[in-house]
View 1: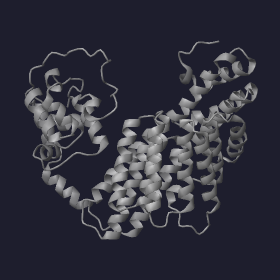
View 2: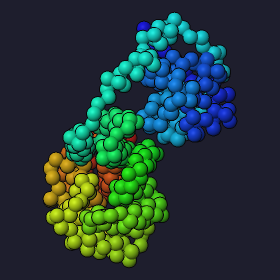
View 3: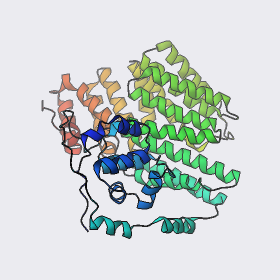
Length: 448
């Protein structure tokens, strides 16, 4: 059966219609689908085919009986119907035309073809959807929740080792599955457990987008994680998500937002029952990052002191949430060094980052690459060109092993900072190795 043309654009007159713009802005897909059918001649079965939905689901949406909220579904609709990303609150889509958009003349409405009719008959209908939902229904138990938590732990491990790009579809799929389970009536402990798992999966999805520097997508999933945690009043986890958003704001060069977000995170943590010193230490470190990005030396040092004080209060019997276990002593040390580095205090930063890097697990490719590039930049700032290039060269192997735009960004920043020294032997050797291991990172850059 031939595939429908996915390249067909919607008429410009529809995309610029205030009614369509308003429907897209609030993601009223029932209205969007009705407009697409009436104004572009794209019938429900064709909408289903283009957006990878079942015809029954499209019909329910158009009838107002179902909403489409998940980001991956919103992306499929944008791509399938060629609705520009900004209209739906998404980043620019890969298929979008350049900034100087060409006006596409209105095309005649399509009539449903025989292929479309056959497709509608071949896809599951409402009755089959109901049967499949019934067959999938299961009695959840605490062991089921434990298994889901274990899978999240494994996702985080694989994210550290390989990056989140290839991991994301599986995480989003599991998030959709867990959110689906929440639609049924469950005993309160099971329901609360599902909310907790869904919140963690949404945060992990947001993190993978953050690591890919797709900040709008990341913020959407972090916001979803906040909402899921709020339902069960898990203030510690809400603090954790806000801290992630604060860190993202530092990368977006929005230090004021970063400070506001981490302050809100600390307020949530203080209002929670049983917040542990490890959580408070992590939040104080994020506050230090925000102050350092603002260039506020005194406030940064105060926050660093608070982080170390809280870390010193950690007891082995503390009921730490699983998501904060990563904040161990090497992490405390390296983050302290990075905070000093952000302030330009290279002499304080270098030994701390070097010490933490020596303790970094070999399997944590992203962490090793990330911290090695920080160390190399610090050494370069101190005039240690040979050491900086040697450190950066050691970081290339783990950088090549992980898919992380954040790591790639730090590599490019170091490479750009080498510009005044390009003809020095150490810099020449580093660039030669870089072109061998990661040529795409400097493609188009002139040779010295």
